[in-house]
Amino acid sequence: MDAQIERYLEHLRVERRMAPLTLEAYARDLVCLDRLAGEAGLALPQVQPHHVRRWSATLHGEGRSGRTLARVLSAWRGLFRWLGRQGGLTHNPVEGVRAPKAPKPLPKALSVDQSMQLADLQRTDTDPVLEARDRCLVELLYGCGLRISELVGLDVQASGVARGWIDLTAGEAQVLGKGGKRRSVPIGAAAQQALAAWLVIRPGLVKQDAAPLFLGRRGTRLTAEQIRSRLKQRAIEAGVPTHVHPHMLRHSFASHLLQSSGDLRAVQELLGHANISTTQVYTKLDFQHLAKVYDAAHPRAKRSNNR
Image 1 (cartoon, helix red, strand yellow):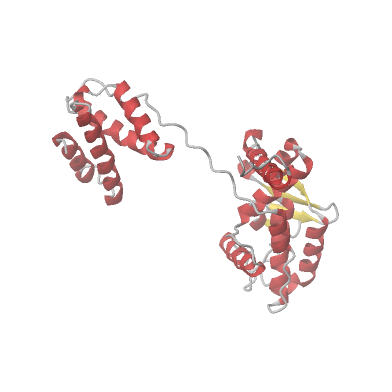
Image 2 (cartoon, helix red, strand yellow):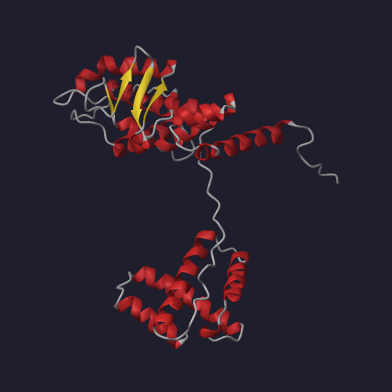
């Protein structure tokens, strides 16, 4: 390894007190730089921006992701910046060089059948109070597309301190979303039935705080972690072949609604997205669904094996 790189790593370890695992990652990235410069017959002060861009492209072609390359370039940039302060070079060849954008992974959504499988689960071997509550949780997450924080914040009725509440008469949930923005979300027939059933037996869990819509055994507001745990277990019992979390049901709500209506603006409003570009990711999920239908059904979709 180049002696300058060794001194820089020692600087990161002693003066910057970099965490051991982070230091190991920096060392690997800088060893890579040392190798590439050596293969090009260059000392570090001779490295130019076009070298860095070519090496970045080479690493990308070898399968390094955009996120990994961003980390690599950050390590290289830090080294050259430090060398500049040491008087070892007059320019930083990594300044202005950016890693290719990493594609954002598509949100994972359940199929319609899997969603129905989860929502229709009826357990008879558990506490009927908790069963009614958990069914209601699922219906509001999938039927209304609520965020977990919005669900946790729901109260039985409006008050001066309520973050959100249920209006069964109007068939709406008033929720407080990101950025403190309040919106009304319609509650479907299945969710209304689940809510009505839960509200009948909910008083059995009320102790001191009667405001929260969803209560635990001790009479306190159900937490996000408790909801995640209950939903995970419920999905297992329903036979859904994937890990299910609350936001997956929100993704499923949006994807299935868009598949049926094609109304992107309406989905944006229901989800409470400030920017429609955030909602547009569901058009890709919709296209994936259409592509699967095409592949399965169209006679020209599959190539002939006789070619």
